[in-house]
Image (cartoon, rainbow, N blue to C red; front, side, top):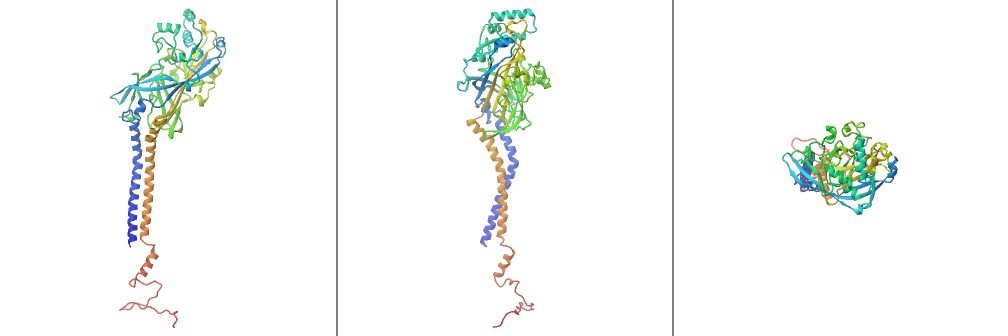
Length: 513
């Protein structure tokens, strides 16, 4: 009897425990998704209390800027009308440091900031030094010639005389450091004197002059504290809601983020937009495929083929024209009217005629495409590689002797890649807080629900066992317990008498001794 009581108590305990586990598991299934959502929103918004704020303020990921120059190895032939032949030099690698300052939180759920940038040359990662000499087009002289194409012949002859007196030729031999960070010569001094606002660095001309120890303008972005639907989106850049470099409202729009973080909870239908001051426009990337980086699930976003397409191939880009072949974007309107073009390296994804016009170009997806790997739940980039090329349109201009017989060509000058990947303690913290913990909660809800079902089933089985071995067992127990219980059904009974118990019927098969 005591064993049955214990069994019933055990069944009751298992039932209660199973019911609690099942209820908690069911509650978690309902409560965990919004809980994770709130956890993510709290930690990705621009707020000093959020987990990602220090990461947003000063990017802990080591960023590197890799520069590749296209050295012209047949300049004299080009001047005589031959096809340019180039040789890629580099990479020349710089460590890029970024941190935000003048951070100001505004009343309209936005924050304004400047992001300072500085670069340090990395000899151990580079194929060469900043003292290497490279033969390149004389960008200032050839740009001036193209800009003078429709001017009166008298003015063009004066330009020829001036360039000659200042020692300017169609090609120059400069060091990597000079091409990157600026150089001074008589023509640069002349331009600085008469056009004082033309160069970002006073009295110097270089492809990256003014970028070192500088900033990319004042960004004002939404914090997401009050309205998470606009988190990280740009409200204004340098006080502007749109730029005025281009010829359509759509092309002048400032869309997306500042290029460091994106709104959380992305899907494959999401687009990755950001405004790039260096490109003077907003760029839009599209989803390509899922992946994993350091144990963290990611979405890879890449540039669509229409990113630098001309207006005839992709009508919305008509505002970036005047255009040449598809796959290169005219950026002269934001580069002092110099005939400069932006594209993918080696004219990847561009009209093949562009690469065929220059010997030494070999476009391919693996080396020359750009991508960003984003953790879709938080919108934080895990791994990125942004690659762009700068090219110069040059041609012979009648009346300007320095241009010789140069055939019209878009000649690549250099391409650069900005790359960075989350690593070390930052990656571990991110994984633990924003990937592992939500995953544990997700698994816990189903484990508890399954455990609850198992315990409830065990409770039912214990309860059944506590009732005895079954009907036959119960009947046998009653027969063995004493005379007050009915005898076995196999024993025949006599007819009941009126006064007493029935008399047993003699067994006819029994033998008499």
